[in-house]
Length: 258
Ligand code: UDP
Image (cartoon, rainbow, N blue to C red; front, side):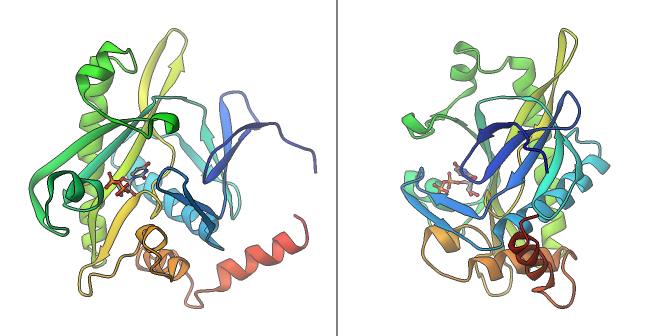
């Protein structure tokens, strides 16, 4: 196997140069971090599940007309995506009070919001991803007002679609994070959905039991992380009846060094 050029290693993914110019390979790791990487661990099999879940969601979103970077899944842990210039803003969409929103405003976890809230955070670990407004984004030149308009528009469409999709399988979409990137075509660029959508960056609560089916299991030391991610995959129709088959296969492949 020829060595591919690594472009970047993040907390949960590694990016490699793709086979054609303008493409990138996203490799999904099992590493998990929380609280700005102060807490670190591995969730065995997480990368495989996130690769599959993200593929599914990006494909469905593409189908309703949201432009995304996703091209195709290559194997258990990798997907081919379009190379974009990532806009350094984390877009958080909230339907229900949880996490930092509950803390910041002293609100009770689980309260349904009277309307969806979009928040922006500047991606900078050294600064602990501070929350910013459109004003900061425009003043510091992180994105233009036109780009921010497109981003807010897409974020609402993604939320409407995903909230319905998850509700249909008994899961409440509490909140989630999106990232966007610029796709260049000559001197022009347009904003498309990038990164991943998986239980790593979403809060997903079982509608009946209230069980958390997302990374909060890791953040809060609840255990059963991989089972929770598997349950999300299963409800989305992505798992065979023998739930561990997909994971076993991947471990098997790894053991053979392929
Ligand atoms: N989120 C994320 N990456 C971050 C921060 C937040 O994916 O760096 C997601 C998180 O999983 C949750 C939503 O964004 O679904 C809102 O997170 P919140 O602001 O409540 O922060 P947290 O409580 O996770 O620190």
